[in-house]
Length: 192
Length: 158
Ligand SMILES: [Zn+2]
Image: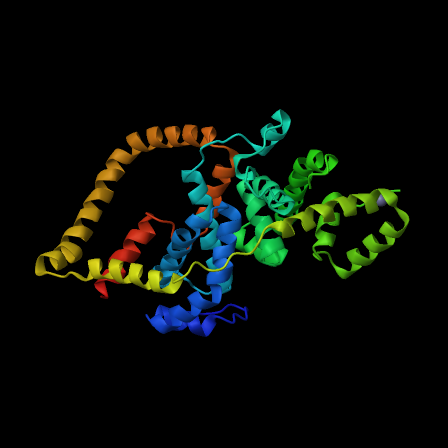
């Protein structure tokens, strides 16, 4: 049985049905969270082609391990923790080091992804931001994505990542600080 | 005048400070150009992030997911008396034997493995070392003894 310890979890009933093997309940859960899960993965990995596979692995883990979810946190917190782990371990597998944005800026090289024929300013700026996010250390990146794009509170991010509230404040600040440093030369040149 | 801590300023921008702190910071900002500039610069960084577009869920996501789960489950369901015997008797006995064996070996091997693991970890950057800490907070980390036990028990119930 699921016990919810002093937490009002809007998903408590549905997860209980999933534990009992109810596939319709699982479908409901997937429908509710697929958009959010796909977007976190996309923002973290930066490659749309990888999103479906990783997102499916996340939900397969939910289906298989629903019984071991003990309701000590909200379901969404548990789910996002699985997403975070999946993202971090994906990056661990694929860490081929390309020339960093900093190095490109230093040598005046335009990143390959920016050499699009229709070189719209908007696309270019988006790529710059994309690359800068890609270069953030994993935990700073995850904390920033959960806060800025998913609108999670610092408190919930702390639970998802298993760290303290001050650590979250610091991770998010350091992420912004790193981005600011990367953006600065580009801003000087009016590229962003 | 003591300026506002940058971490607090960033949290303020995200609406993540207490009411008391919010009033205090707002008052300070009215009279401090330095902190005002700092806030603007941080908020420019935050605004730049809006350039990253939202994606739609890959088409047929649920259909593909359902297929994948069904495939995995059909592989699991193949049951013969031999498979049942393997699951109910051979696997638990094997696991038990393995545990006893590894207890003997553990003392010798453990130190060596632990040492090389530590060396491996040292080579990874902090990001990955930190990842291991995040992973350990999963209900059952993969391949843990708990997980093996959980799988055995849950198979019994099938
Ligand atoms: Zn000030």
